Length: 66
Image (cartoon, rainbow, N blue to C red; front, side):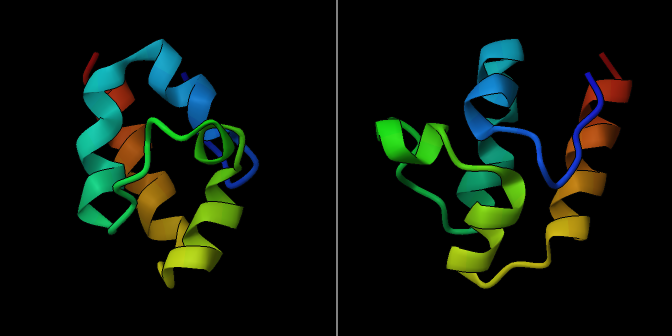
């Protein structure tokens, strides 16, 4: 899986729920909420005050190791 700022969080978690800690680390503790699963990386990062490129890079590194 290749993650971009426009990737839907639910799609990432459906691909591999082991990616959840990356969202928890940025303060996104509402992963079970239907609204959060429908957000893009960019939307979630804006709400949580996180740089989206940093999260995208971490997630892509995670998926590259799979």
